[in-house]
Structures are given as structure tokens and as C-alpha cells.
Length: 443
Image (cartoon, rainbow, N blue to C red):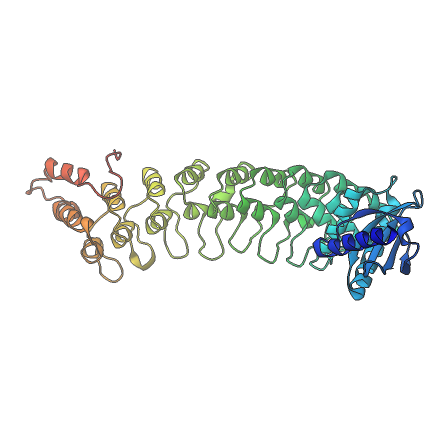
């Protein structure tokens, strides 16, 4: 019977190796008395299990010597020795700092973390698993950043673990370290979900608050990019600067690029002058960057000048027409945007609308005073562009409209000639149905 019992145990052990050799299991310490102990470090020991032909790593508890936890059971001695060194080194702070014996579930969590993050120190693991009491262990206090430059404080910020963060700060963890990507604890906090973490980190003034990552983003830029309005407001409460130039421009440019209205508004509430800030590449204002009508309205409410030009001489209206942002263009037109202003290559907004064959946009430009006879730098008028570019169903509609309105509209009125008949103007405004929405809302 004893032989069969051992046979069953051997089969179970082999099965365990092929299923999950790292599953933590409670075992009887007596079973290992007959096995050879190859290594021992603190409470961690490595045994050669002759019956199962495996190498078993045990964590013993002096208070309960009858039972132990098997941390892993491997069929390769070299692998077992490597993992033993890792487990013995990294487990020590946890079992020595814990007031109670570690539970099986805790050990499994620690074991998984050791293997999933081999470059992490015990301090990183402590943050990930929530064992804050181990931070004051001498072994943990001496540890710094991992292989990617991420410190335990970075990790605590990303997790939003206030308890771990407070404990680390009390242990004088440095807040001025950037990881391999140039990201600080503030960047990590933005990626997390707790604005209170940012406010705690920003209690004392620190230059790292406005540090640019290798991607050219401060924490404020990043919060705007991710659309985290609560993070933006917390950063601004800590006096994060709105005037740090990143790769795309200032934080408000980032908010506009990603259409994050709440983030843009939070910045403008603190510093309304940001509506006049210009990006480094195009010298464009936030109004040029607006992709939605609500963003355009917001900027105009804060005093953005509708006809300011970029480095290429384009106004926001030129960009809206070029990108097909009809709703933005309508807001700009109703706030006094110049329809005949020349931009890059002498293009007026009407030239651009003709080039892109956007019938509703063309109607809007003409109704708001766009001149169909102004030549661009290469001598082309909007009418000529229409004849070249317009295709399909829009072509006949557009050419008929130009014939009806264009020449009459674009020459100074002659007192000897009758004005444009009301019926002709009316037919232009009404136009013919197109594939896009009707234009009857203009007034």
C-alpha cells in the first residue's frame, strides 16, 4: 500500500509539472525530510525530489514547521537554481516585514509578479501587490528604478495607490526621476485614474511638473491628448505651465488636435491668452486647429481673432474649407471671417472650396461675399477651378450657379444696368439638391 501511495504522489507531481509548475501549493514539510536540500536562503529552500524527479522550492514558516508552501516544481535543475535565487532574494522583504504569515493567495500573487516582471525589484513588486509595509525593509529601501527606468513611485502613480504613494514619499522616494521614455511620475499619474495623486505630488513646487518627455509632451500635454479633464484641472491647480512648447505646440494645441473641449476650456479659464498662442511649425493659433464647431465657438468666446493668419498666410477659414469642416466654416463666417482673404498661393476660401468640389461650402462662401473672379497667384479664378475640378452631379449644378450669379455678382454695379433679378439670386440660394445637406439655414 505504501508503494502505491508513493506512486500516486509521483503521478500527481508529474501532472503538476505539466500543468502549472508555478502554482503555489501547501505541502507537508515531513515529505521532504527524505529529500536532498540543495540550497537554503532564509526561509526559502530548494529540494531535489527523487520520487517526482523534480526540483521543488519551499517557503517554510518557523511558527508552523509541519507545513510549507511549495513555490514551484520544475523538471530542470538549472532553471530551478535560477528561480530559487530570484525567489529567495525577492521574497525576503515580504515575509520578514509581514506581521502575519503570508497566505497562499498572496504568495501566488507574488510568484506571478516575479515571473511576469523579471526586471522589477522587490519595491516594484510591493507596489503592484499592495504590500506597503515592506517599503521600510532595508533591502527594499536600497532599490531604485527597473530596467525601463520606471521607479516604484512611477508604478504607484500609475496604479493610483495612495497608500503606497504616501509610504514611498515618507521613505524619501525621489520624484525627479524620469524613465527611459523621459516620463516622470506626473506622466504616470496622468495615465492613471486618480487626480488626487497629482495634487499630492504637486504639494511642493517641482520643476519636474513641466518636464518634457522624449515625445515632446509635458504631463499637461499628455492629459490634453488623453482627454482627461480632471487631470488637466489638477495639474493646473499645481501650477503646471500652459506655456511649455512641445512637439505640436502648447498644451492647448494638443487639446484642439484631439478635440478635447473640456481640457481646452480648463486651460482658457486659467489663462485666456492661450487663444493667441502659435504652434512652432505653422505659427497657427488654436482656432486654426479647431476640428469641431463647438471648439471653434469656445475659442471665439474667449476672444480668439477670427482673421489671424498662419505662417502660410492662411486664416482659420482657409483650413476649415481645406479640411472640409463645414460646421467650423459656418461658425467662422458668422463671426466675420473674410471670404476673399488670400492665403497660401493666393487661394481664397472659395478657391479651396472649388478645388475640393464641396457644393455646400461653395454656396456658403458666395453667400457671405466670396468673389468668383479673384485670381490666385497662378491666375486661376474660382470659376476656372470649378470648371476643372467639379465632377458628377455637382458639376452641372455648380456651373449653372456660376453662370447665374458669377459675372453679375463679381463686377461693380453699373447704374445703367439693371441689378441682379431677385429670382436669379433666389434660385442660387436654393440651388438644386445635392448629396450633402441643404443650405437653407443661411440667413
